[in-house]
Amino acid sequence: MVGYISIAILLSAFYFIYKTTWRSWQKPEVKFPNKWRKILAKEVGYYKILDIEQKSLFEFKVHEFLLNYKINGIGTQIDITDKLLVASSGVIPIFAFPEWRYKNLSEVLLYPNRFNTEFQTKGENRNILGMVGNGYMEGKMILSKPALHHGFKNVSDKRNTAIHEFVHLIDKSDGNIDGLPALLLERPYAIPWIDLMNQKIDDIYKSRSDINPYGGTNKAEFFAVVSEYFFKRPKLLAQKHPKLYHLLEDIFDQDLDKRSFEKKRLDIGRNNPCLCNSGKKFKHCCE
Image (cartoon, rainbow, N blue to C red; front, side):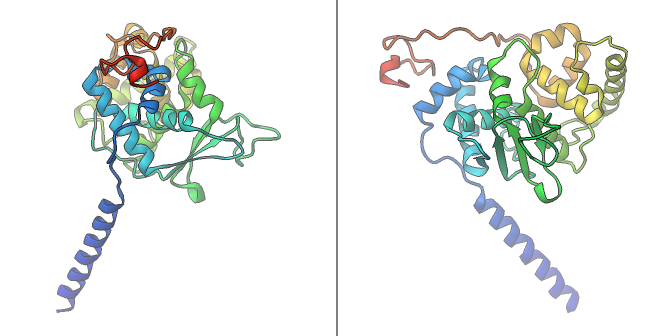
């Protein structure tokens, strides 16, 4: 009898946790604001390469992100553009996985500039642009606000600090930050991925690679660094590192090398077609 009671208690507890978690996850119940759409169209190159249906899904995932994760400024004011860039950074790596949730994240903190390991923005050793928290900071991500914006404004480099940190969270989702995203990487690809990581890290050490040298720190940093490269300069990555590109393509289930991320100057008049592809004039849509 005691055994049955214990099982019943466990099942009840499981149901309560499941029900509470399910209820706490919010989904958008209103339309994506036109003002937000305009910001995405202007600031996020990834959004601009999507077709209309994909844009709609991206907007839904960004909206969902903003409803479920807190974004706060520490020593700096933040606005909706900052929040949309954070949300976009989280959505881009997992865009092909509509049900993905960052269960190891509750809040993103934006700092006014670089910080140190004590999370101080003044003094010495302030060389950190982004960090996934652990210990008492578990569930939090810290980003430099200027680095967040630089990742979207500079389209010629291979860096995006926010995407880098979200890839660490993806890596961490199986319990280990080790460069082996077990939840996304199918078993047959695991050994080739490890072998290729070792080879590419060795190339970095021998100064025979255009990959950010920070990727040579360890396998976890390599995965995050080449993921930045994959989402910022996919064509270049495919040209210089075809095997690496195709493995990342399998991990993220996204084929990007045939799309253009070139950022063009936006000279939009009130009577021009709206950036959001609604078919309406700009003045009647996202102005």
